[in-house]
Amino acid sequence: MRIGIIGAGQLGQMLGFAARDLDMECRFVDPAENPPATACGKVIKSGFDDPVALVALADTCDVITYEFENVPVDALLHVEGIAPVYPPAAALRHSQDRLDEKKLFDALEIPLPGYHAVDTRADLNDAADKLGLPMVIKTRRLGYDGKGQFVAKSANDLDAAWDELGGQALIAEQWVPFDYEVSCIGVRSVGGEVAIYPLSGNVHVDGILRISRSPVDEPDLTAIASKYVHSLLEHLNYVGVLALELFVTGDKLLANEFAPRVHNSGHWSIEGSETSQFENHLRAITDLPLGSTASTGHSGMVNLIGEIPATTLSLQTGHLHDYGKTPRPGRKLGHITVVADSAEERDRLVDLIDQSVTQRI
Ligand code: AMP
Image 1 (cartoon, rainbow, N blue to C red):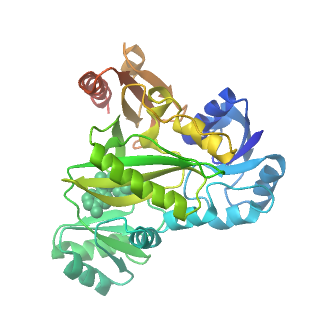
Image 2 (image 1 turned 30 degrees about the horizontal axis):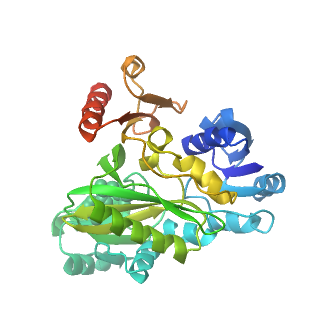
């Protein structure tokens, strides 16, 4: 079985490592010089939208998947007649446009923050009237890790928001004074089998994920989030791993966004779950039975952003993943996972690692 993966970054690399254990072969398309997944299989060095490269991939692979959500939908449509493409292009289309995504949440009765489409400067005033301030203005497309976002705290900020982001399709969102953020990762196979991982509690700094902890000891929230992920998976006739990010306010959940791929907030599952998200994604798209999503302990994950300090190598605890990327400020270069017998011990270890890492950033 050969898997074609569009993108050869760290998610492709971790899919590649999981594939090796399942005796599957991987082949990638990526424009970068020496991307992280190079160690996991042949990389066709080409743009994600290059029809020649994508056809070459589809011609030589049994199934096609992708590791990031800015793959052009047309590129998927171009090859899906040659080899099956999972997750389905329709899921990718919704996730690429924040307005479409929110309309989908609405249609599925998944609660979400108030929003207003913004195409003109006047729309910003209408949004502020409707949603109140502060509000977050985001680009509808191609945003990631908090990029393409502006928090308007008062009406005086609206001109600056427009100067920074105006001229492209935008969306304004109600500001959510959340208690914390969680994500719920689910997986659905070609045959329709569904499995859901325990919730991850996520801490973002400057819009970038810094820490995940799982499970979250909130059975009611877990049940509600699982229900939302189930409805997305079924509605989209989805195949593969999907991650839904949510804000927690009291006993309520509000959906922020979903990613039609394996997700950074599920990296702990490599060591902390009976079956990692990467293995289950591969099982799902090749129509194998899904593996158990039960946790093997209390997991924590700390992202290594901008640099991998030498101190991380001498840490006496945790499992280091170095993606082999060139350091750059704000770039995810690796992560460290711990799995402990109790939530308290996990939190102690996560704090220790976080301090050792952030002192150097
Ligand atoms: P996003 O790119 O939409 O995932 O946003 C990145 C991060 O910004 C989120 O994980 C939150 O920490 C924060 N954020 C985004 N939207 C909102 C919102 N409407 N209210 C409060 N914080 C937000």
